[in-house]
Amino acid sequence: MTTEQSAREAVRRILGETARADITAFPAGSVSITIHSGDHYASISGATDSGWGWEVDPGCDNGFTGYPNVVGALDEALLAVREQFAA
Image (spheres, one colour):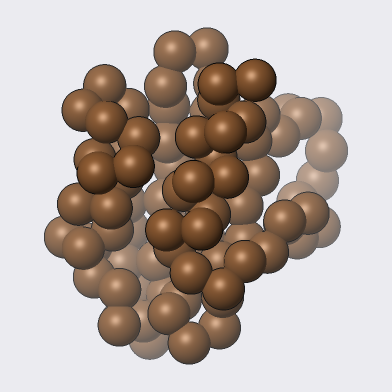
C-alpha cells in the first residue's frame, strides 16, 4: 500500500527536491498527488492495487472526466510526469 510518506519519497527521488507536492492518503488506500514544478502542474491519483492515473497541465476549463493516462505503478506515473515536465 502506498502511504503519504512513501509517495513523498518517490516524488523526491524521481522529480527532485525542487518539485512541490501536496499529497493526501485516504483511509481506503488511494492517494492523490498534486505536483508543481517550474511552470508545470501535474495531478496523479490511484492506489497500489488499482493503478495510477496522471495528467500534466490539465485545462482549467475542462470538467474532470478521468485521467487520459493510466499506468500500473506510481513510479511509472512519476517518470512520465518528469518526461512531460522536461518537454
